[in-house]
Amino acid sequence: MTQNIAAWVTVTLPSRYGSFANRQKSCSTHPRRRLRTRVTPPTALAKRSSSDPDVTTLEAAVISAGLQLARSCDFRIERYLSKTEMFATARAAAEQLENTSRGFSGRSALRKPMIGKWNLLFTDSTAVIKNKGSITGLGSLPGAQCSRVQVILEAGGRAQTVESVTVFGLLNSENSLIGKWKLTGKTGQRLEVTYAEAILMGKSKIRADSKAVLDTTYCGETVRIGRSPSGDLYVFERAKSIVPLPDEDDK
Image (cartoon, rainbow, N blue to C red; front, side, top):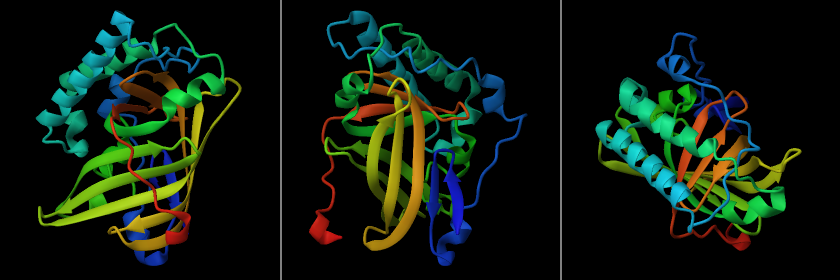
């Protein structure tokens, strides 16, 4: 069956996993709705330029605000919206980057900066928050906590999203979605990731038909910002290393 397990991912899993993948819908009275401001169109992308002090300062401000928010929530994504003032500060810092007017000229210019490993810093997606940040839904289990979500975009077009879930502080689970990524849309700034395989508990491989779509509103040296089709905000911090993907022979 096909079910939505996050605002930006839809996955087909065997029925034994179905109970973990229910769609989480947002309410119009949810704090995220009250905090939402105008979505910046994806044409306002900032160029990657480490020599630009303004961009560097803004990126540092976003990371600082995001980490402060995460620490105040004990790195539990489901608690983000409870920190209304702190979350508003992080959102405002991200929107300053989105409003940077220096833009990429098409997908060929954006593709190279997108390549790399990205850690999810914070989001206002109700579905992701209710799933405790989990891309598979396993993070919503009693006693479970998702400590990280990483998106890896390879130069060859391969993609992997990895989550780390801890249950009752004892059992650690590494879950992954593996597939392909590309840039689409008239301006080439829409990131589409199509997943074909899920690896649960670090070893169980199952079929996963899923697609993630984010309009890239900023991509710089250390920060990448995307918006889902419904306007949900996703802020990523660039990691230094790239996690290797399984070889074709290992599949």
